Image 1: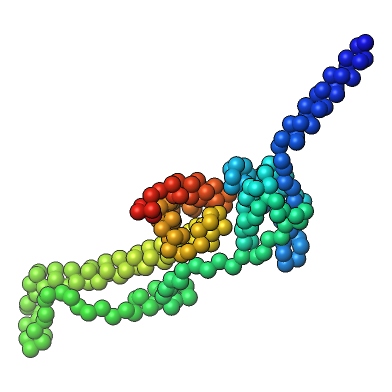
Image 2: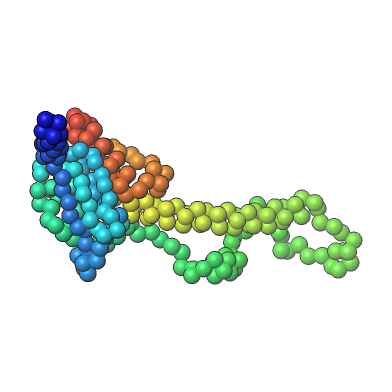
Length: 250
Protein backbone atom coordinates (compact mmCIF):
# COMPACT_ATOMS: atom_id res chain seq x y z
CA UNK A 1 0.00 0.00 0.00
CA UNK A 2 2.81 2.40 0.91
CA UNK A 3 4.65 1.48 -2.29
CA UNK A 4 1.53 2.27 -4.31
CA UNK A 5 1.19 5.67 -2.65
CA UNK A 6 4.85 6.44 -3.30
CA UNK A 7 4.57 5.55 -6.97
CA UNK A 8 1.37 7.61 -7.27
CA UNK A 9 3.01 10.62 -5.60
CA UNK A 10 6.07 10.40 -7.86
CA UNK A 11 3.85 10.17 -10.91
CA UNK A 12 1.89 13.26 -9.88
CA UNK A 13 5.10 15.25 -9.20
CA UNK A 14 6.58 14.17 -12.53
CA UNK A 15 3.43 15.15 -14.39
CA UNK A 16 3.33 18.51 -12.61
CA UNK A 17 6.96 19.21 -13.42
CA UNK A 18 6.44 18.31 -17.09
CA UNK A 19 3.41 20.61 -17.20
CA UNK A 20 5.40 23.53 -15.78
CA UNK A 21 8.21 23.01 -18.26
CA UNK A 22 5.70 22.77 -21.09
CA UNK A 23 4.20 26.12 -20.09
CA UNK A 24 7.62 27.76 -20.32
CA UNK A 25 9.13 27.91 -23.80
CA UNK A 26 12.88 28.16 -24.26
CA UNK A 27 15.15 28.93 -27.19
CA UNK A 28 18.74 27.74 -27.48
CA UNK A 29 21.50 28.09 -30.00
CA UNK A 30 25.22 28.44 -30.68
CA UNK A 31 26.70 31.84 -31.60
CA UNK A 32 29.54 31.80 -34.16
CA UNK A 33 31.49 34.28 -36.28
CA UNK A 34 30.34 34.44 -39.90
CA UNK A 35 33.88 34.89 -41.24
CA UNK A 36 35.61 31.87 -39.68
CA UNK A 37 32.93 30.03 -37.65
CA UNK A 38 34.84 30.76 -34.43
CA UNK A 39 32.98 30.63 -31.11
CA UNK A 40 31.66 33.93 -29.70
CA UNK A 41 31.42 33.70 -25.93
CA UNK A 42 29.84 36.31 -23.61
CA UNK A 43 27.59 37.68 -26.36
CA UNK A 44 24.39 39.40 -25.18
CA UNK A 45 21.00 37.89 -26.00
CA UNK A 46 18.03 40.09 -25.05
CA UNK A 47 14.35 39.23 -25.30
CA UNK A 48 12.86 42.61 -26.24
CA UNK A 49 9.38 41.44 -25.27
CA UNK A 50 10.01 40.10 -21.77
CA UNK A 51 13.21 42.18 -21.18
CA UNK A 52 15.03 38.98 -20.16
CA UNK A 53 18.73 38.88 -21.02
CA UNK A 54 21.41 36.19 -20.97
CA UNK A 55 24.96 35.76 -22.27
CA UNK A 56 26.52 32.96 -24.26
CA UNK A 57 28.87 30.66 -22.33
CA UNK A 58 32.48 29.74 -23.07
CA UNK A 59 31.39 27.41 -25.87
CA UNK A 60 29.17 30.07 -27.48
CA UNK A 61 25.93 28.36 -26.42
CA UNK A 62 22.95 30.20 -24.94
CA UNK A 63 19.61 29.21 -23.42
CA UNK A 64 16.86 31.83 -22.98
CA UNK A 65 13.18 31.80 -22.07
CA UNK A 66 11.16 33.08 -25.03
CA UNK A 67 7.95 32.49 -26.91
CA UNK A 68 8.06 31.83 -30.64
CA UNK A 69 6.58 35.27 -31.39
CA UNK A 70 9.16 37.11 -29.24
CA UNK A 71 12.01 39.10 -30.79
CA UNK A 72 15.62 38.57 -29.72
CA UNK A 73 18.53 40.98 -30.12
CA UNK A 74 21.94 39.27 -30.22
CA UNK A 75 24.99 41.52 -29.97
CA UNK A 76 28.71 41.47 -29.27
CA UNK A 77 31.43 44.10 -29.43
CA UNK A 78 32.98 44.26 -32.90
CA UNK A 79 30.02 42.53 -34.59
CA UNK A 80 26.76 43.73 -36.10
CA UNK A 81 23.82 43.18 -33.78
CA UNK A 82 21.25 40.69 -35.02
CA UNK A 83 17.52 41.28 -34.51
CA UNK A 84 15.64 38.04 -35.12
CA UNK A 85 12.38 36.34 -34.23
CA UNK A 86 12.66 33.49 -31.73
CA UNK A 87 10.89 31.21 -34.19
CA UNK A 88 13.71 31.74 -36.71
CA UNK A 89 16.56 30.79 -34.35
CA UNK A 90 18.53 27.84 -35.76
CA UNK A 91 20.94 25.64 -33.86
CA UNK A 92 23.76 27.94 -35.04
CA UNK A 93 23.54 31.74 -35.16
CA UNK A 94 26.17 33.65 -37.16
CA UNK A 95 27.24 37.26 -36.47
CA UNK A 96 29.09 39.38 -39.03
CA UNK A 97 31.90 41.82 -38.33
CA UNK A 98 30.87 45.46 -37.88
CA UNK A 99 32.49 48.53 -39.41
CA UNK A 100 31.70 51.73 -37.48
CA UNK A 101 31.63 55.10 -39.24
CA UNK A 102 32.25 58.08 -36.97
CA UNK A 103 32.07 61.80 -37.64
CA UNK A 104 35.24 63.36 -39.00
CA UNK A 105 37.13 65.91 -36.97
CA UNK A 106 40.03 68.19 -37.82
CA UNK A 107 43.46 67.75 -36.24
CA UNK A 108 46.27 70.25 -36.66
CA UNK A 109 49.12 68.94 -38.87
CA UNK A 110 51.59 68.13 -36.09
CA UNK A 111 52.71 64.56 -35.50
CA UNK A 112 53.45 65.08 -31.78
CA UNK A 113 53.56 67.73 -29.05
CA UNK A 114 57.25 68.57 -29.60
CA UNK A 115 56.59 69.51 -33.22
CA UNK A 116 53.59 71.57 -32.14
CA UNK A 117 55.65 73.33 -29.45
CA UNK A 118 58.41 74.18 -31.94
CA UNK A 119 55.91 75.67 -34.40
CA UNK A 120 54.17 77.49 -31.59
CA UNK A 121 57.37 79.15 -30.31
CA UNK A 122 58.15 80.37 -33.84
CA UNK A 123 54.68 81.83 -34.27
CA UNK A 124 54.83 85.54 -35.13
CA UNK A 125 52.21 87.65 -33.40
CA UNK A 126 51.41 91.23 -34.25
CA UNK A 127 52.09 93.78 -31.55
CA UNK A 128 48.70 94.72 -30.11
CA UNK A 129 50.03 97.18 -27.55
CA UNK A 130 48.82 100.78 -27.88
CA UNK A 131 52.30 102.21 -27.34
CA UNK A 132 54.27 102.95 -30.52
CA UNK A 133 57.88 104.16 -30.34
CA UNK A 134 58.69 107.23 -32.42
CA UNK A 135 61.60 106.04 -34.59
CA UNK A 136 62.54 109.63 -35.46
CA UNK A 137 63.49 110.28 -31.84
CA UNK A 138 67.32 109.71 -31.65
CA UNK A 139 69.64 110.20 -28.67
CA UNK A 140 73.42 110.17 -28.48
CA UNK A 141 75.30 107.66 -26.29
CA UNK A 142 76.00 110.28 -23.64
CA UNK A 143 72.38 111.34 -23.58
CA UNK A 144 71.29 107.73 -23.22
CA UNK A 145 73.63 107.26 -20.24
CA UNK A 146 72.20 110.28 -18.49
CA UNK A 147 68.58 109.58 -19.36
CA UNK A 148 66.31 106.83 -18.19
CA UNK A 149 63.11 105.95 -20.01
CA UNK A 150 59.83 106.68 -18.24
CA UNK A 151 58.44 103.86 -16.14
CA UNK A 152 55.28 103.90 -18.23
CA UNK A 153 57.28 102.82 -21.31
CA UNK A 154 58.89 99.90 -19.48
CA UNK A 155 55.57 98.92 -18.01
CA UNK A 156 53.95 99.01 -21.42
CA UNK A 157 56.63 96.80 -23.02
CA UNK A 158 56.46 94.30 -20.15
CA UNK A 159 52.66 94.18 -20.43
CA UNK A 160 52.88 93.47 -24.16
CA UNK A 161 55.35 90.60 -23.62
CA UNK A 162 53.21 89.15 -20.83
CA UNK A 163 50.11 89.39 -23.03
CA UNK A 164 51.87 87.46 -25.83
CA UNK A 165 53.01 84.76 -23.42
CA UNK A 166 49.57 84.41 -21.82
CA UNK A 167 47.93 84.22 -25.24
CA UNK A 168 50.21 81.35 -26.25
CA UNK A 169 49.42 79.48 -23.04
CA UNK A 170 45.69 80.00 -23.56
CA UNK A 171 45.92 78.90 -27.22
CA UNK A 172 47.72 75.71 -26.16
CA UNK A 173 45.10 74.92 -23.52
CA UNK A 174 42.24 75.61 -25.96
CA UNK A 175 43.90 73.36 -28.55
CA UNK A 176 44.28 70.49 -26.06
CA UNK A 177 40.70 70.98 -24.89
CA UNK A 178 39.30 70.83 -28.45
CA UNK A 179 41.30 67.70 -29.32
CA UNK A 180 40.15 65.94 -26.12
CA UNK A 181 36.53 66.94 -26.76
CA UNK A 182 36.58 65.68 -30.36
CA UNK A 183 38.15 62.37 -29.33
CA UNK A 184 35.56 61.93 -26.58
CA UNK A 185 32.69 62.65 -28.99
CA UNK A 186 34.10 60.16 -31.47
CA UNK A 187 34.29 57.53 -28.72
CA UNK A 188 30.68 58.15 -27.63
CA UNK A 189 29.53 57.85 -31.26
CA UNK A 190 30.91 54.30 -31.42
CA UNK A 191 28.63 53.29 -28.51
CA UNK A 192 25.38 55.22 -29.13
CA UNK A 193 24.52 55.83 -32.78
CA UNK A 194 21.80 55.40 -35.38
CA UNK A 195 22.87 51.83 -36.20
CA UNK A 196 22.34 50.74 -32.59
CA UNK A 197 18.91 52.43 -32.56
CA UNK A 198 17.95 50.58 -35.77
CA UNK A 199 18.99 47.27 -34.24
CA UNK A 200 17.05 47.82 -30.99
CA UNK A 201 13.91 49.45 -32.48
CA UNK A 202 11.76 49.41 -35.59
CA UNK A 203 12.85 52.93 -36.64
CA UNK A 204 14.54 53.10 -40.05
CA UNK A 205 14.29 56.71 -41.33
CA UNK A 206 17.14 59.00 -40.30
CA UNK A 207 14.86 61.86 -39.29
CA UNK A 208 12.89 59.48 -37.03
CA UNK A 209 16.08 58.14 -35.47
CA UNK A 210 17.46 61.65 -34.86
CA UNK A 211 14.20 62.73 -33.24
CA UNK A 212 14.20 59.61 -31.06
CA UNK A 213 17.83 60.11 -29.96
CA UNK A 214 17.08 63.72 -29.04
CA UNK A 215 14.09 62.54 -27.01
CA UNK A 216 16.15 59.98 -25.09
CA UNK A 217 18.82 62.61 -24.36
CA UNK A 218 21.31 60.22 -22.78
CA UNK A 219 24.10 62.04 -20.95
CA UNK A 220 27.71 61.65 -22.10
CA UNK A 221 28.60 60.12 -18.73
CA UNK A 222 25.82 57.51 -19.01
CA UNK A 223 26.89 56.52 -22.54
CA UNK A 224 30.55 56.33 -21.52
CA UNK A 225 29.99 54.18 -18.42
CA UNK A 226 27.19 51.93 -19.71
CA UNK A 227 27.77 48.48 -21.15
CA UNK A 228 26.36 47.52 -24.54
CA UNK A 229 23.67 45.45 -22.81
CA UNK A 230 22.59 48.39 -20.62
CA UNK A 231 22.48 50.79 -23.59
CA UNK A 232 20.25 48.43 -25.58
CA UNK A 233 17.98 47.95 -22.56
CA UNK A 234 17.62 51.71 -22.03
CA UNK A 235 16.97 52.28 -25.74
CA UNK A 236 14.14 49.73 -25.60
CA UNK A 237 12.65 51.39 -22.49
CA UNK A 238 12.95 54.83 -24.07
CA UNK A 239 11.33 53.56 -27.27
CA UNK A 240 8.33 52.25 -25.30
CA UNK A 241 7.81 55.77 -23.91
CA UNK A 242 8.48 57.36 -27.29
CA UNK A 243 5.82 55.28 -29.08
CA UNK A 244 3.18 56.51 -26.60
CA UNK A 245 3.91 60.18 -27.31
CA UNK A 246 1.42 62.21 -29.37
CA UNK A 247 2.61 62.70 -32.94
CA UNK A 248 3.00 66.46 -32.38
CA UNK A 249 5.73 65.81 -29.77
CA UNK A 250 7.78 63.43 -31.94
